[in-house]
Image (cartoon, rainbow, N blue to C red):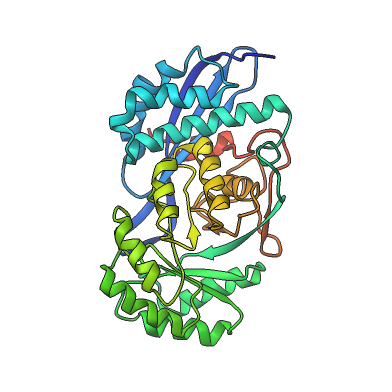
Length: 362
């Protein structure tokens, strides 16, 4: 097979209610905002892609953009040429794909295209991209500002009970030192703690906070300053008492190249649903390898385990359980602190018809 024509594109917005209301330095969240993209081919398999964000109504806003601008560029094209399709959608949309919802939309279509490529190859996406390992370690993520200390500890203990070696909490409150001390005393010295500031500080403040984090053996200081200011991030990285981490709000290979060249992080965290899809994630993984930087991920652990697991620079995948058991056709259960990469052809992240119906925005 030398060509597989894309026949149609379908975009479906979902609103997934969170089990409890969350709060970070960025805001209060009640639901997960998801857009699922289905690419259908002429006589071949269909592919599934998706993008998502915490809260907001971005999914509904992306729908007409995907259907009216990206779909006409995709229909009739070769699904087995994801680089060509990526560029076909990106080139006329450069002004709207500097980041944000435009690139979220492109990411979803690109993920669906790679799903088709792997299915036609008869390989799991992880194997197609290198297959470095098929069991990927994950860390627990949560620690929202609204959690009382007892629930904060409960989350960390739940992660440890699943075999996870680490847990991430949000910082940016007056009680950060007390919360960290409480976790460290109860979880022990060997348990890894990560901290996420969600861009809460300026450079001076971040450097001061890093000394507090160092007291409790925190492994990384995530998004200490505004994501758009790589100069500030690099200065914090140079002066911080703990390694920095960032990337969830960086876009495409060029944004990550600057972060790598400036040595602004010790841990790179692309979000495949935002950064430009699988096409760009591959390039970002190669940058991490070239600059000898550990590669993690932001959200979407179901897909991220395949991508982070494909490269030798893969470190751990963020695990935040937004969906219910049975929402996907594959199993993404954590066992002994790891998730097994799906071994079926494609990327394996397909929503069940019941989940689509249950969460679909009417």
